[in-house]
Image (cartoon, rainbow, N blue to C red; front, side, top):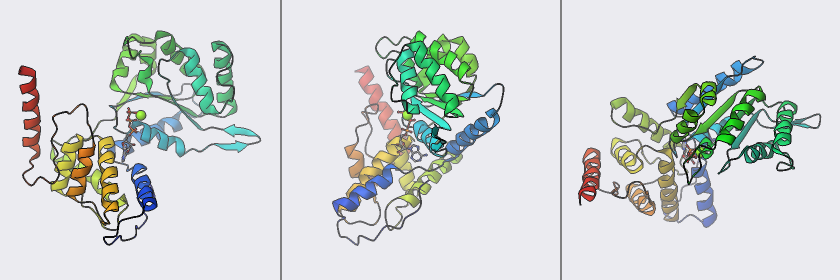
Length: 328
Ligand SMILES: Nc1ncnc2c1ncn2[C@@H]1O[C@H](COP(=O)(O)OP(=O)(O)OP(=O)(O)O)[C@@H](O)[C@H]1O
Ligand SMILES: [Mg+2]
């Protein structure tokens, strides 16, 4: 979480470009620890702790759709354990890495070496890179490895699992001697289905879901998320995002995916600051929503600044339109 800063009142005077830029940066870096986020964070913390000095370090697979906040969470965890230099060696307590697209054993090893800071990351054969990587993991006192974008072990065009790279990951996890977190989209399940040994090593699988909004508890949770965000928005006054009226609209607009919540607020912040407003209102959100193109929801309607909006009706209408298109 970022420190709360009080933003100057604009009092109707448009913010300067510099000021808009700084407020946009604030929104972009806004992270709030909602319950699922905190649960997964403490799970990782525990796993990190229990694995220290253990004969068998623990490993988990974190799965979630695009935009739910997996990378945000893992990067925050990595940032809690910054690198340092001790006796001329760089100490890297948590190594974070993304599987490159079209992964091969060599490209995965090279990208891990690069994340560790090896300037010659792409030099040498696959075997020598792997040996160097295992050596650096010891020397840099790596305590945990995070491998994000795990679904890149599936070929984008053929949709086949890249078996050599997934076998390499399995052996690497065995030899690294530290806990490993694999993270990726739900389709990564296919990699586990193809590689029973990898599946066994990552028997513990955690889902990071988008917010839901059906039950009262789910609505309270989403509204709690909006309230925490509202408290951090770069405006002098609150925007009351968590009020039922705005929260219903915000949920419908985003389907509970934090990425879209952030995108709408980012554009709305720009519009509001440019017009000298000291909080966000529905017109800003309406305009911001119009700027978004949500390709998997071509039939979505703009819920903001619509007095007659009803979330159930809006979903029903969207579904009906989808069915009408399918039939015709
Ligand atoms: N806890 C949070 N609080 C506020 N905003 C969040 C939070 N988590 C994610 N977001 C917003 O959602 C955006 C997308 O998150 P992130 O990139 O971490 O998703 P992801 O699950 O890694 O998606 P992908 O699978 O596409 O990589 C973030 O840039 C941030 O704006
Ligand atoms: Mg990500």
